[in-house]
Image (cartoon, rainbow, N blue to C red):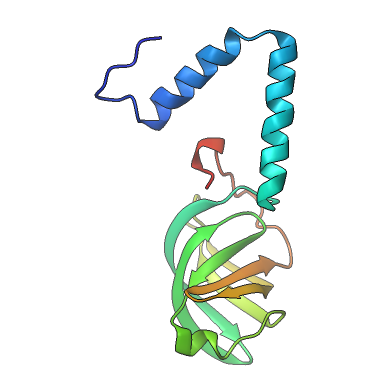
Length: 142
């Protein structure tokens, strides 16, 4: 496959080139590639694919309402960018209730979870239940 310099870095062009290479591989090589990719995905510790998603979110922790911005999301959780002064009010394991718009369907979502991790620029939330119907194409994973 010939890829012009104009679009060689687009998701479609890269995916097409990978697909062409895989089609030329033997079945055994394909199986080994799959095994390696699965192992690599398990190394990241991510159970669900994530995608970038910048959206305002309202959330309640310790009966206090806050607003912030989601920076990425998956079926199992999300990450909220948050200033340090606000982060210091939270602990891992705190119960959180969130309301935001579904990234694909634009439906209003209200979901509960817990703060799974805290870092300098925000915190990760693990949902109590999977966010159903959140489809993240493989080419959108982080």
